Image 1 (tube, rainbow, N blue to C red):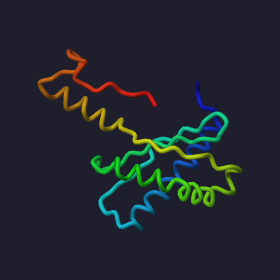
Image 2 (cartoon, rainbow, N blue to C red):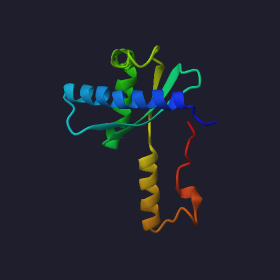
Image 3 (spheres, one colour):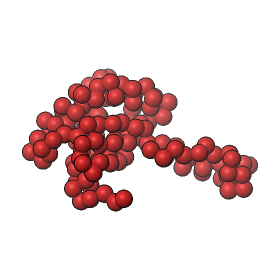
Length: 131
């Protein structure tokens, strides 16, 4: 099912402001050399939940940072509500996920360049989970 124009607009507003909030929090927290990007935001049909997909570099710290972001979701949601109060009537609940698509593409590329070819042997690559 395709997203409506309203869902897309809310998603893009949230995405833009989330980048600023998360990068600001990372630099204030003294985290150097960490890049957090919001790759996509999907808003449900009833506009009550926003699924936020994050790309975190370096990848080794992704789990730790995601846990920290999830624990601070109420603060992040409040900050977003303040930033978008003139655009959104209600702030959707936020759910955060790690976007591993770049890692998956990198894994395929390495496999194609190496001796093991995932086209000939598809069992080499991990199965992707639909979320």
